[in-house]
Image 1 (cartoon, one colour):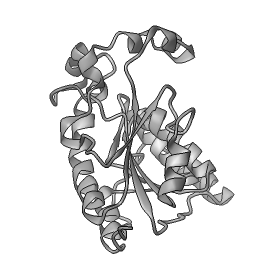
Image 2 (tube, rainbow, N blue to C red):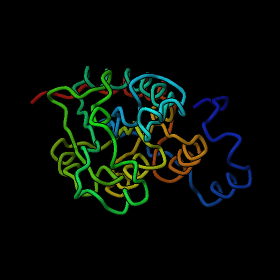
Image 3 (cartoon, rainbow, N blue to C red):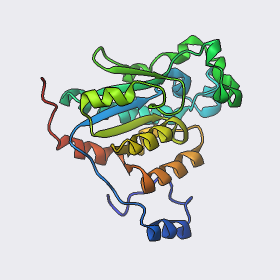
Image 4 (cartoon, rainbow, N blue to C red):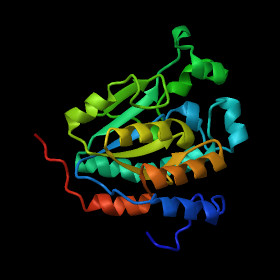
Length: 235
């Protein structure tokens, strides 16, 4: 990565903090494996809104929307998704299914607006919507792994690398990154393909994931790395 590239956390993380992480030995890169899978997390209208508008306006439609940040990320996810489809690599969609009364728990106690999302909010963002061969992974909790079929699906796919995009950086993305890392996957997060409703939370969590759990890099650099990898061999 070019030393001139501006990182999302530049200007927020102090030089003293960076030095402490470096002294502790954090910040290394594990790179990519040989069999990538793409996880598109919670790319639904409840987080994107139905049109690209500023955050406060977007939240009038869906209280949980992240506004224009979601649409900016979506535009950068599209070429990554296209490459995965062209190369025959698996695409999985961890997503929140419509909430039922029995879904009430600690999260909805903390964030009660999650129980009042209109049905349209659970539809997938059209430009990145699943195709018939993609795998849907409904979830009730932040991590895409917790209480879902994801670990089993990835074993069946023989994946060794997870490219994780979607939202929110500080919530479901981070939880899934940590769990995926704990399962010993190579974790890759294209920094401009994840989003959050809070700019500071977005930047600080990207920094921490980059230092500890994931290879965090711009989507353009990831596309170059993926382009050099062989396509999946059909069985």
